[in-house]
Image 1 (cartoon, one colour):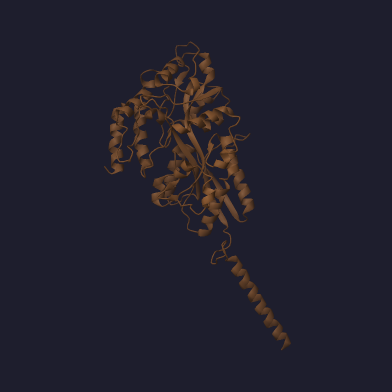
Image 2 (cartoon, one colour; image 1 turned 90 degrees about the horizontal axis):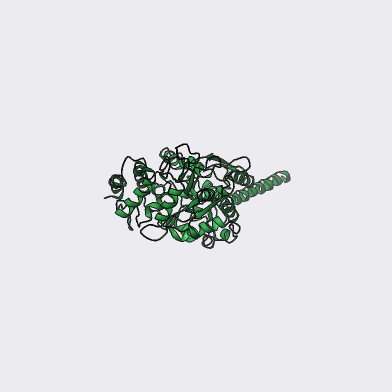
Length: 445
């Protein structure tokens, strides 16, 4: 009897301990119940190439962050998928169509803001619960605005940029051309410089160096500030009408294309889709066949490190509006739709892990962008970088792209026609009239 009683008491004790353990595992951070223990499994992260290490690995930063995160979260594995920036929109489109999207994907800083199209498709998660109200105050308001739709936050901004003109000062000196004072100039002054910077260096009867070049590609906007200089814009203020057909826009588009088509101060590649080749023509010491190109501010860092260049940062030239203008972008991270609440929480933790003040400071100093966090900017990442300081001054000139839900399709319609202009197949007026028909359908006209 005594032995039986002892076994009975032990059984009660074991059951009680198991119940306590079960209750502990199912207790949430705020003291509630019904939450499972920390999620384990695999998170898929896409990212584009960033700054290179000494082995020319442009994914080393993300790889190191993944290792740190995995070490801090036993049972969690993070798979990195390397995606060239130019292929990111199409690759995401295919993955969404096949319902095989990643858990985390970057927002290309050149694309200006988070995709409203993706939000309305329901494939991007709101991240309102990732930060407290006080934590959100550390982000610049315009950075948060770029990731906000219908009052909800759909991503975490980590960087801001402006597009700026980069001038190869060695070529300016070689041709005896004065760069614009304080980086400010008119279209006529810019055009005069482009003419002087176009020349036959080896006297073989062929032009070796051109004054200017850029590229045209959906989702990229280095060329677009030129289209705004007379006061033009792609859509009107309430985004109900396509307005690149207006004279001020048509004239600006045509005059940029005419740098190649009429004046021969730009190479045949002007308006093409070769992003890397365009940059190499300006930055690669073995080429240096273009004197002036517009780029997002990541190119400043690249010209200071991997491709050391004697260069200056300048405004886009002013046109009939008389005001300098540029386009800005906000890079960051989005979380794609999650079925499992535990995984959703872990994905959110990863996004926060790669978006801290210290990481944004690193992005600023190494990748050539401006932090989206005030605390990172307060660390003064540009104190020894006059070129970045000059670019930061241009933030007051920024005009954001229209945040229309159909912007991706609108952009594709416009950029496709722009490529025909720069190929000489259509005039700017013809191309924008053709784009108008497609865009108006998207606008519901």
